[in-house]
Each structure stands twice: as C-alpha cells, then as structure tokens.
Image (cartoon, rainbow, N blue to C red; front, side, top):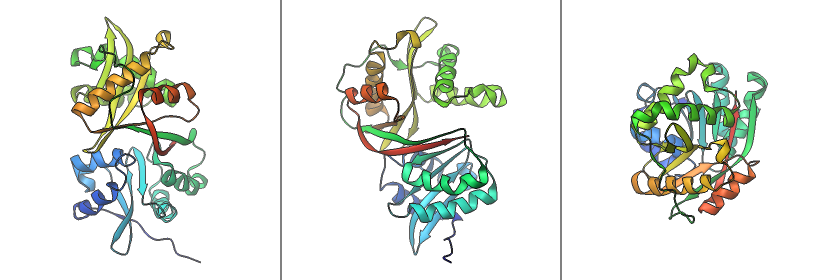
Length: 283
C-alpha cells in the first residue's frame, strides 16, 4: 500500500518557494498570492496555517487553511496534494465555510473529505475562470465609482442581498453579520468596492475582492433586480475593469457559475475570455 505524502505547515523561510509556485498561474492563484504579498507565509502573520507539499526540493502545492480552505497545486500534483491536505484537514476538523480554488485542486480534495465531513450545502464543480488584460469591449458606465465611506449604510443592504442571492444563505446568520459588515467596510476603505448609487439606491455594485501584483479578482457583481436586463451589468463591469486595470492590477479576473448563462454572455461581451476553471464547496 502506497503511503500518502505528508504536508507540513510552512513558515517565513518558505516564502520564496511559495511565491515561485503561485507565479506559475497568477490568475488562478490570485486569492493566495495577494495574501502572501501582504502577510508573508508564517501562520502568525497570515492568520491561518499555510500547508505545503514538497517532492524533493520542489514545492508542489499549498493550501491556506483559514475561514476558506484554498488549495493550489502544480499540474500533475493535484491528487498527491489532495491526499496530503485531506489528511491534515481530517485531523484538524472542519473550520472553513468554503473550499474554493482551481477545480483540479478543489475537487479531489473534497472527494477525500466528504466521507468524513459529511454533505456540503452546495457543490459547484465547474465555475469558468475568466480574465481580461485589455480595455473592455463595451462602453463603461461613468456613474460607477469607488464607494465613499459615508455611502456605506446605502451599500450594505445591496451587499447583503448579493451575498444571499449568490451563496444561498444570509451573511447575517453568523455573529449577526458583524464580520461581513467589517469586510465590506474594509473594502470600501481600500477603494476596492465600486457601485452606481443614485440617492439611497444601489443600481450596480462589484468588489475587487482579491488583489496581487499581477492580477486581481472581481467578486460580488450585482444589479438591483428591477434594473436587470438593461445592460447595466455589462457597462458596470466594464467600468470596474477600467478602474482595476488602471489602479489595481494589469489583469482582471472573475469566476462565474457555469449555469449562469446570462452572466457568462455578459462577461463575454465585456471582453473576458476563459482561462481556467474554479470549483467551490459551500457549507
């Protein structure tokens, strides 16, 4: 019987190897790369352990074991990484609300964890990962701008509605929503939340939820229900792309549910092309 390779908790001495691994696919690794660039690789600064799997002297895979479990592996190393990370995750117990990342890393990991952790609330195995590195191909909506801190009370109901619609549960169910409100406020202060706001109404919103030097990832795209079907989502997303390419990172990415045909068509019209596949397991 073959023994599963063991993962270990990485520390600050591993930062160079981690950065080199994530640089092999900057768009797919954006969620992790941004955290590493800001906080390094020690658990004390990351706020969660970063597991790593080596073959010889080469780092083949990493997995951030925080509020989200985020694995990333070199092509061909996904199965070995899944075995090593699943072993650690089983021993630690489930502490995450989501497993998310490249499908090739997420799905084999979930296959090993499901018998122990039990059924997930939702599994989304094929979420196209899209990216754009040039100007958008539709006109940008000029009324989409970074949200000001004094507009936070107006933005919050829209952000809560977006989360509930996308994830299937309200963000207020945990700690009364304090953590989610703090996250929204942090993005506003960082200039990473954009919206079209008229008076006390949000017509469109989106967040630049992950940022690295090479790429950023747009999340939380939402159009108020009564304004849907009017092209606001396309023009709003185009505005986010223009802002992000100028002020944040040269490549703008996002991932979308494969069953959301209208959104996929809209992103294609904006100029996004598919560069990979993500998967999400939601608890």
